[in-house]
Image 1: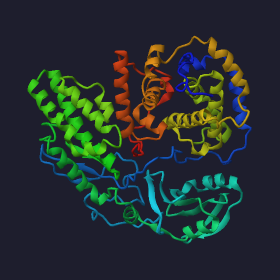
Image 2 (image 1 turned 45 degrees about the vertical axis):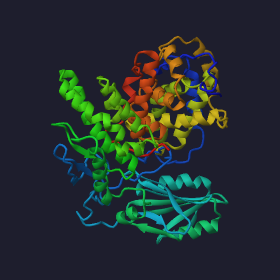
Image 3 (image 1 turned 90 degrees about the horizontal axis):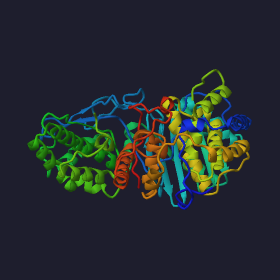
Image 4 (image 1 turned 120 degrees about the horizontal axis):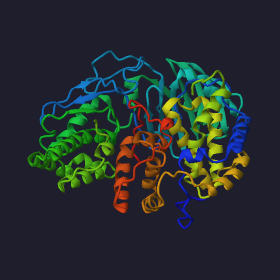
Length: 361
Length: 194
């Protein structure tokens, strides 16, 4: 098979709609394929049970820990305070301490040591992702070796054990005080699933090392609660406790050239629970840009040139917003805001900016 | 995936019936030879069959299947797919049926030609938006990115296409009853692209 992108000289095929596909005379092939597939062996024989989405593996990281909203009050006078954000799934889940940005002492820290971290010389964190209530993942590497630690809802334990048993019967071991099973994908690639504890299973996969080295690393794992997990994050992550100050700093940077930060009467709430600075920056700069773009749109519709000028004056300096300059190396976010600013400077309402930035309607 | 009618087989039959046309359409719109779409659909549903417990429910099912089909397609393009002989009849039927098809299309040939002048990553988000009618959050699910990455990428890609065409193509109403958009409170993966 070849890609149409690789062979542009190929005659263009019709891009049939799903409806047109449904009307193709394929009933025999369609039915036969179904029976063929269902005659193949399955890995999870049990009746389907709710399970976490099998999402594509991420290339980078994230850790949405406890949710927080930062409220910027009073036009041009940024003041933030923290509150729970109910729109975030998993916020305040049982067993998941809902630490609040800027106020880590707002409630008693519940110890829920279902995550594990690795304390071993030479090993560094390469990837972190957590998506309540589906669980999370933390990856480490040491040269060509890697160790991936997953924590998942305990109810998925049977499914995962059955899946891994496709590699043969597992060998029973004890990990962090609980029974577990080890399977070998190859001589240098092993995985272990630990029985659920505190509502979560742990799976740890080690690649690029033999069995003895793998078992040795398992012995160096440490269970952590929410605070311990955050403490184990590399320096570049924004923890719950740091997030409020980070947002304030980003807003201060924007306010150096765009003041006031928000147009009169605008919704001045900035919501973010992001530990990744790029995504945090998108949340904050997006809130400011969306507010001014909405103001320009309204002013344009009303034919109010003074308000249009104010909005334009607020957005044109976006090319100097420190956070956008920082983010420009990492993705398209900054460029899009700048393109919208150019449109506004030319007196036009940028098409589709709400979708482009995910502005709240 | 939830047990729809009391058994694994029934659940898979329901999944297959609900999404076969969409998955096959996804593949057909991206391969040069229509029969190759049979391989993509076959491998995609084989993954779903083997991993049925991991297939998300409801509105998330379709983007999940597209995400699998996308990776299957990439494997096929690298010559790594097709290690089984499933779907041979479907291959034969597609080879005959598609060249004769004159059915509804998701976009005009000139739009497709213009899209080819864009970068591969611009093309991909535009295809998912214009061909499958997916919104940024769903596209993010399919390609394993985040909405913070996808939204601006789609916005810029649309602007570039608009510049080339002098108009802004809209996504089709492609199977509107079943495409389904993800709920707004769906948890996001947050991830930079490089």
